[in-house]
Picture 1 (cartoon, one colour):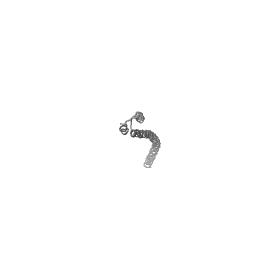
Picture 2 (tube, helix red, strand yellow):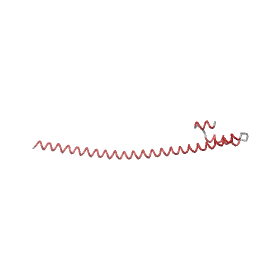
Picture 3 (tube, rainbow, N blue to C red):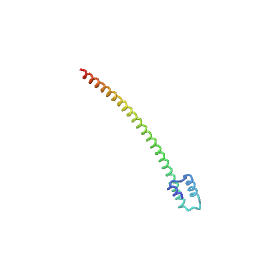
Picture 4 (cartoon, rainbow, N blue to C red):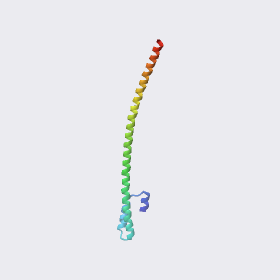
Amino acid sequence: MAVDSLLSDSYDASEIKKTLTLLRKDPFIPRYLKVEAGYLLILLDKLETQKRLAEKHAAEKERVQREIKKELEEKYMAENDRLKQELDQLRYKLQKIEEIHINTEKKRGIQ
């Protein structure tokens, strides 16, 4: 039962630890079953440690991804603003060049 619940990842660690500890302390249980219960306790401890470590790494990964996303958004927003300003300046310059061209054409037509 304990192994099946460990493998299916649907277990209550404290309940399994308590049960396995009681098995190890029971004088009527054969020695080989007590040894197997000890192995399962060690396995359970290692699984819990790995689970906590995986959760910690997952949280760290999520935090790093958020930071990177924020940095990229800020970088692209700044670049976007700079390009918008440059576009506005170029539009203004084009408009002035067109005005100068129109004025030049008018002056040529008068002469």
